[in-house]
Length: 201
Image (cartoon, rainbow, N blue to C red; front, side, top):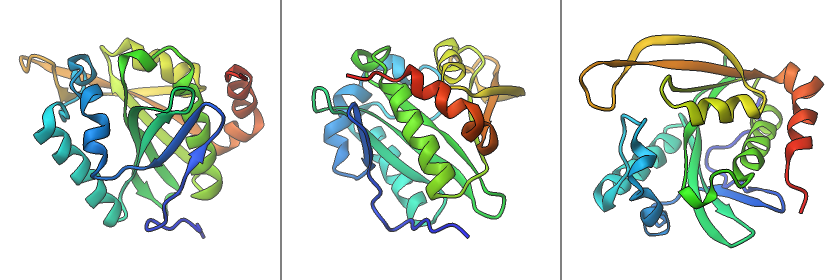
């Protein structure tokens, strides 16, 4: 049985990054980043502008209260700046499975090693604290940056949902590329491989 408590404020951190539960007050902390239009290019839920971002954060906080999601804000400890956010969603303790997604970072934080540190902490948290056996991830088929990032942290491509998303211009449908990582493969090999890629300074 998982000892996970939705009402508890879990803090995940190492020397590079700190993840703490997302709060409504983070609208002001994230607004500048959220207004980078490229962030929402491959998202059917938009978070740009005060109104959209407030709704975006309110909904995931409510889903946390309903024990469906657990969202985090991401802080780069090297500069003490808010870098973006991410969440665990579709949490199912009966199946011991969850999804990791809704991840976005400001442009200046991409390619800095931040994402690998976040994923390492989140994988450890989901497998050890939440007692999950499977973490699923997904991305628009056109979102090559996210797809490459998932592969780089050890996720395994397992298929796609055809035409599940409205496309960027709403003129056609887009596929979702599906990935996952299992606890057994994480503990036997993928944890050490990802750890070797982390920035040590």
